[in-house]
Image 1: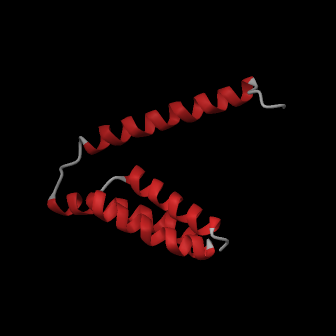
Image 2: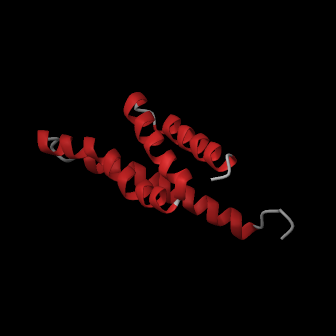
Length: 103
């Protein structure tokens, strides 16, 4: 394969992009037709924390010392800034630093 993309790869990437776009559009379309009650609003506001816990915490636990440090760094950065990309960058930097120290 020597580093080049074959047509099959391009088709797979394009298909994933289209499916992602349709899911996002579909989500907005559905939520636009649901009455937004206070209970639903609270549930939607809790989703980022639930997604974080379900996806990141198992990795942090299995990640050894680097994961144990990166997890709280991500959580604190997310809490303080509210920006996912910044929290991701802080977690990667923390894990890289700890691994660079030899842990």
